[in-house]
Image (cartoon, rainbow, N blue to C red; front, side, top):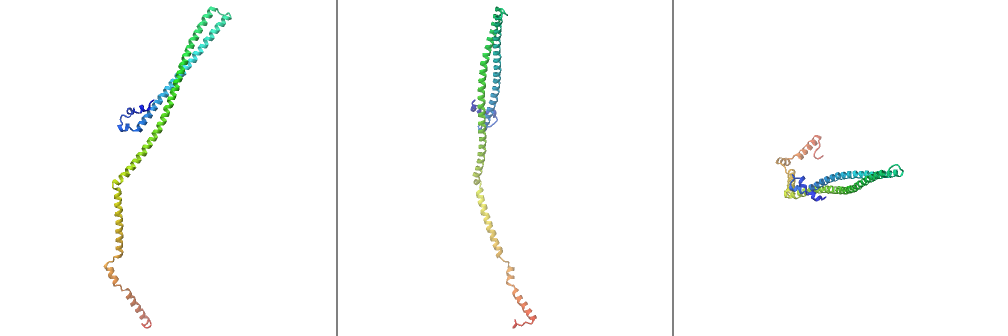
Length: 237
């Protein structure tokens, strides 16, 4: 089994795929695994069939060997009857020869089926080795496929992140952020300046009221009136 030859038959199952997809390692690996599993099923089926032939051949061998022994036993019984005087020699010899001929025929069949049994057993052993090899290949390729898919996900994610990072400054994002920072700082300084102006600048009315403030003079007048009511003179004060 040559897995590489099988893999390159990918076009048969992926005829509707684009050329670049056909060359994808993942697709090729998946097709290779499918082919190996198909081979595994065929090998298992073939082994079962050959094993059935081996069992049948062994049963036939045992049957012919049993017949050979039976004919040999019958020939011996016939000869014993001659010894006991219960059968004519000529008849006994004729029947004993026939029994021995049947024994030889049965033994030849037993020998042939025994050779077939050995051949079938050997085929079963070879198919079993092939099945184990295919199973091992499937396991290895499935592990490789899982690793390959994981690597593809990582590489795609890394590629996308790196692409975004590479395109970030080219799109003017960084420079735009710098301009925004500068504008915010300028606006903050301007707001602070307006605040200072708001606390220091007075209206003309406020300036007039401050200049014309008579609060202290009024208090002096009120004090003089109160002393007058009490009869306190300036000298006593």
